Length: 102
Image (cartoon, rainbow, N blue to C red; front, side, top):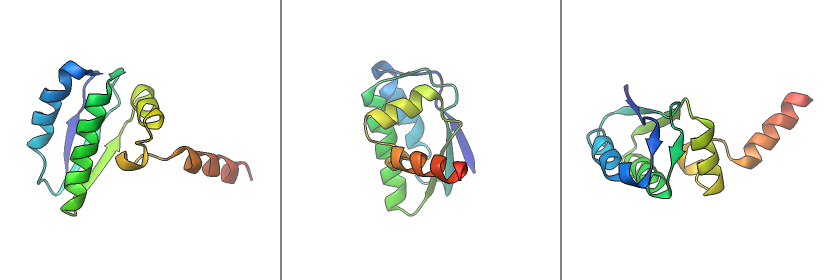
Protein backbone atom coordinates (compact mmCIF):
# COMPACT_ATOMS: atom_id res chain seq x y z
CA UNK A 1 0.00 0.00 0.00
CA UNK A 2 1.46 3.35 -1.05
CA UNK A 3 1.23 6.33 1.29
CA UNK A 4 1.19 9.82 -0.19
CA UNK A 5 1.65 12.84 2.06
CA UNK A 6 -0.57 15.79 1.20
CA UNK A 7 1.86 18.23 2.85
CA UNK A 8 0.97 21.38 4.78
CA UNK A 9 -0.54 23.65 2.14
CA UNK A 10 -3.33 22.65 -0.21
CA UNK A 11 -3.86 26.15 -1.54
CA UNK A 12 -4.98 26.93 -5.06
CA UNK A 13 -1.34 27.37 -6.11
CA UNK A 14 -0.62 23.76 -5.06
CA UNK A 15 -3.57 22.17 -6.89
CA UNK A 16 -1.82 21.48 -10.20
CA UNK A 17 1.18 19.90 -8.43
CA UNK A 18 -1.18 17.85 -6.23
CA UNK A 19 -3.01 16.60 -9.32
CA UNK A 20 0.28 15.53 -10.95
CA UNK A 21 1.51 13.85 -7.78
CA UNK A 22 -1.72 11.92 -7.32
CA UNK A 23 -1.92 10.96 -11.02
CA UNK A 24 1.15 8.79 -10.49
CA UNK A 25 -0.95 6.66 -8.13
CA UNK A 26 -4.20 6.37 -10.12
CA UNK A 27 -3.72 2.66 -10.78
CA UNK A 28 -2.00 1.56 -7.57
CA UNK A 29 -3.96 -1.26 -5.90
CA UNK A 30 -4.30 0.69 -2.64
CA UNK A 31 -3.37 4.24 -1.69
CA UNK A 32 -3.36 5.99 1.67
CA UNK A 33 -3.36 9.79 1.65
CA UNK A 34 -1.78 11.27 4.76
CA UNK A 35 -3.51 14.55 5.53
CA UNK A 36 -2.17 14.98 9.06
CA UNK A 37 0.08 17.92 8.22
CA UNK A 38 -2.47 19.93 6.20
CA UNK A 39 -2.90 23.44 7.63
CA UNK A 40 -4.37 25.35 4.67
CA UNK A 41 -6.97 24.14 2.21
CA UNK A 42 -8.52 25.66 -0.91
CA UNK A 43 -11.58 24.37 -2.75
CA UNK A 44 -9.50 23.64 -5.86
CA UNK A 45 -7.41 21.12 -3.92
CA UNK A 46 -10.57 19.53 -2.55
CA UNK A 47 -11.80 19.11 -6.13
CA UNK A 48 -8.54 17.35 -7.02
CA UNK A 49 -8.91 15.02 -4.03
CA UNK A 50 -12.53 14.21 -4.89
CA UNK A 51 -11.62 13.49 -8.52
CA UNK A 52 -8.83 11.18 -7.35
CA UNK A 53 -11.18 9.28 -5.03
CA UNK A 54 -13.88 9.08 -7.72
CA UNK A 55 -11.49 7.88 -10.46
CA UNK A 56 -9.99 5.21 -8.26
CA UNK A 57 -13.40 4.14 -6.95
CA UNK A 58 -14.68 3.69 -10.51
CA UNK A 59 -11.80 1.24 -11.04
CA UNK A 60 -12.61 -0.62 -7.82
CA UNK A 61 -9.38 0.54 -6.18
CA UNK A 62 -9.02 1.26 -2.47
CA UNK A 63 -8.23 4.81 -1.32
CA UNK A 64 -8.05 6.02 2.28
CA UNK A 65 -7.50 9.37 3.91
CA UNK A 66 -5.64 8.90 7.19
CA UNK A 67 -4.21 11.32 9.69
CA UNK A 68 -6.70 13.95 8.64
CA UNK A 69 -5.91 17.35 10.17
CA UNK A 70 -8.63 19.56 11.64
CA UNK A 71 -8.21 22.00 8.74
CA UNK A 72 -8.76 19.28 6.15
CA UNK A 73 -11.64 17.71 8.08
CA UNK A 74 -13.34 21.10 8.49
CA UNK A 75 -12.94 21.94 4.79
CA UNK A 76 -14.48 18.61 3.82
CA UNK A 77 -17.36 19.12 6.25
CA UNK A 78 -18.06 22.70 5.16
CA UNK A 79 -18.06 21.71 1.48
CA UNK A 80 -20.18 18.61 2.08
CA UNK A 81 -17.39 16.32 0.86
CA UNK A 82 -16.77 14.19 3.95
CA UNK A 83 -18.49 11.13 2.52
CA UNK A 84 -16.72 11.40 -0.82
CA UNK A 85 -13.36 11.44 0.97
CA UNK A 86 -14.24 8.51 3.22
CA UNK A 87 -14.54 10.68 6.32
CA UNK A 88 -17.41 10.37 8.78
CA UNK A 89 -20.26 12.71 7.94
CA UNK A 90 -21.74 15.03 10.57
CA UNK A 91 -24.68 12.61 11.06
CA UNK A 92 -22.32 9.67 11.55
CA UNK A 93 -20.29 11.62 14.11
CA UNK A 94 -23.46 12.54 16.03
CA UNK A 95 -24.67 8.93 15.96
CA UNK A 96 -21.31 7.64 17.15
CA UNK A 97 -21.24 10.21 19.98
CA UNK A 98 -24.71 9.13 21.12
CA UNK A 99 -23.79 5.43 20.93
CA UNK A 100 -20.59 6.00 22.92
CA UNK A 101 -22.52 7.89 25.60
CA UNK A 102 -25.02 5.05 26.08
